Image 1 (cartoon, rainbow, N blue to C red):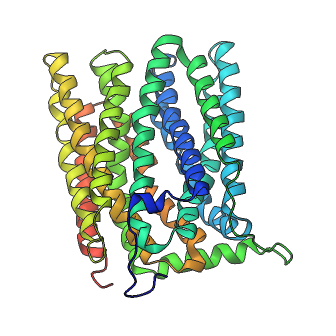
Image 2 (cartoon, helix red, strand yellow):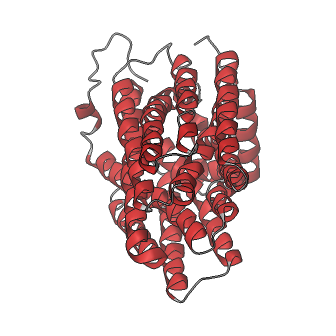
Length: 412
């Protein structure tokens, strides 16, 4: 902990002074670009090759849901065996499976069951890097720099959402699935190389490893922690809205408006740029005592911005409809960037350092649990009515905002 009364350098320069942290950040950004390319490549493949919005929703859900189920065990493994080696494990699995997808799509149109199975495996291992990177930052960065590292962490997500979907959509429009999945494999290979030289404190492995006991301890800790319970309710429900929006955007652009896949990338790039702006601006603030407001207020902003999708599906000029989609992503992205800062700092300040790996993995899983539900619902409802899917997103966002206001603890 920082010494009371000490003069502390809270600048981004101080944060980025350690070469090892810079390498970890580079690997994190590259890995997240690969992760951001994956759902776009899978959704566009489902829409173009299989003509199936429900398959698109199922693939998006599988990229997240299995990891959420496995998160208590993942957290125990992170605390017991270390973050770096398990982050690398995820990147190696992602490299292997996206390379396999490249070969499968080169030979024709693989069966839906095969693509679903490969996506499921990717969804399981992805939690190693998602929770591993975030808990690694908390372990290695002093707490007076947490707002800064959280802003950089959130910015890494936004950079990924600027670059990943845009690159994937453009490559898909040029060469289809094979070249797109090959590019994803290359990105994960670069993330593996970037992790070289990143180390952490050694963990003893001489005693018997009781993963089940560590898992039970982690679940019990999260359930007893008022702040983590409140985050699970607020963020989990709001993420249903998030999942609906992220599956609706490509469906609206590609199916409803019959526009080029590249516009899907443009929409996500706009969201990422605005999210980066929101994260950097709010990351400069001292969030002590403000974390609660910084969670539920941006959730309200995301919910309100979702309403801008309704004019996009109401018919009329496709150019104007695209403009409404882009407007949605402007406000949605800015709100999500500031939302991240409140979520990350509240979780860090209310978590026992000895429980960081387990608490972060389980809390992140509970927080993200709404995303696969929203993605699956979006594909299913949009097959009948896109307007109904947009309204569903607004309803879930509203409920999540209210839960944040009511359940997040006011005390410090």
